Length: 68
Image (tube, rainbow, N blue to C red; front, side, top):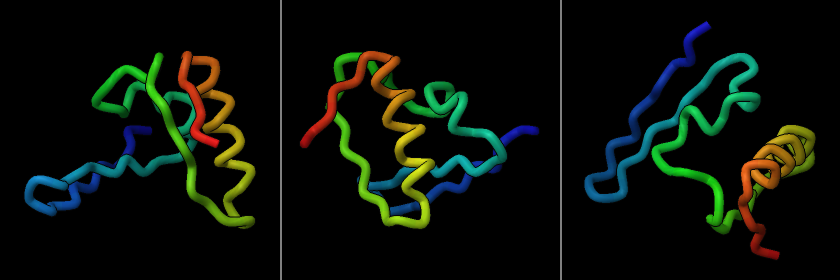
């Protein structure tokens, strides 16, 4: 299933959100940049923590670094 893309229009701070079942498994296909070598952090809560942990593992596998 193709993800739903929602554009958030904030002038020079605009961004897109991709929503879809299983989208985390192909997250790199929905980002406008390469993950390798970039630094990331994830802001989450206990309700979605398992998804955040999956995303962290995926980004690490793609060569990302974490801000701690």
